Amino acid sequence: MKVTICAAILLAICAAGFLPLATPAAVPAGPITWVIPFAANLPPYEAGTAAVGDTVTYTWSRFHGVVLSSSPDCTARTLFQQIPGGADSASGAANVTFTAPGTFYVICPVGTHCAQGQIQKWTVSPAA
Ligand SMILES: [Cu+2]
Image 1 (cartoon, rainbow, N blue to C red):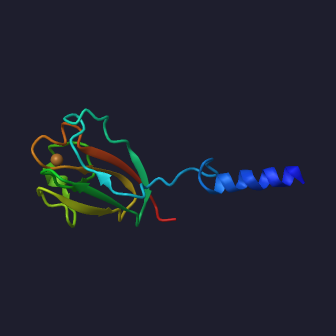
Image 2 (image 1 turned 135 degrees about the horizontal axis):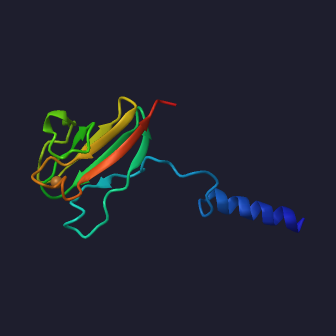
Image 3 (image 1 turned 90 degrees about the vertical axis):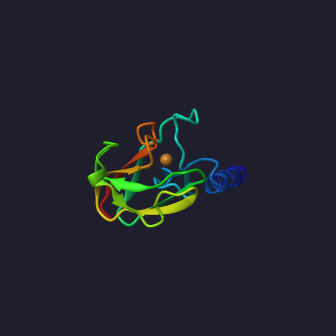
């Protein structure tokens, strides 16, 4: 009887998320705060993984923008794809929806922000 109760409690704790039963979701549940990491004394954005069809939201409250590129080259502007809501602005939010598998980079196209770390790599797998 005691064993059953302990198992039930442990299961409840796991279900509540205190002990991970499975690997966490790769795509962040909430928006990503879009800043210049080097200027804010923050580490670079961690690379993320997603699947085709996933959407990641970036929000900002200073002058930034969001584009998607197939290259990590901050100066390869001909590769920059516009994102709905991603135009350079003093504050905003942009939803990046991955439409193809591959490696992509979310970049801030404003000034030298990308070169200062405002870039995030995404590895996108085919839709499940
Ligand atoms: Cu920026």
